[in-house]
Length: 205
Image 1: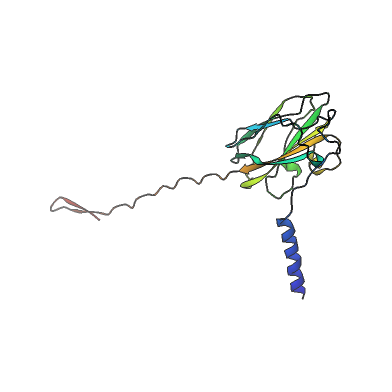
Image 2: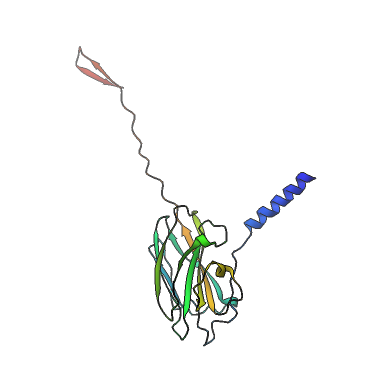
């Protein structure tokens, strides 16, 4: 009976990990209103094998000002430098930005996965920066999160926060590519030679 209970417990734990989902941050003020233009208006990357160009998007209009662009991705090998550009809609409000990538694919964003922030807030300012794909990043498709907050530079507690006032969250895919294996060189076997001195003949086996 104890073994059965342990088996059921382990199965529940494993199932919860397999079917867990990314958290969804939310904002209380809908960013489509004229006085709440605090959203990710432009986001793009360069430097990867595949890059994102998501421009002039305005606000998603979704509940909580959250959207997952499941068809857009950046793809790159470990060690690659990814350049980025992000801005809000120019208005009377100043916003800050931060970006996370779930490098270990555990469906959570921790402090070590905060890859960039704007450092200051800006009104229509085009912020540029870069981050490097870690050498130990797990190969495969994972999630990249871009967060905009009114008059705040987002930090790790914000990545899953609910009830924030003004801003928007955009999620994208990020594919960590596997490095190609080194070429295999096949060395042909060395022939055996025999020399017959009497008739000046070389035999090759």
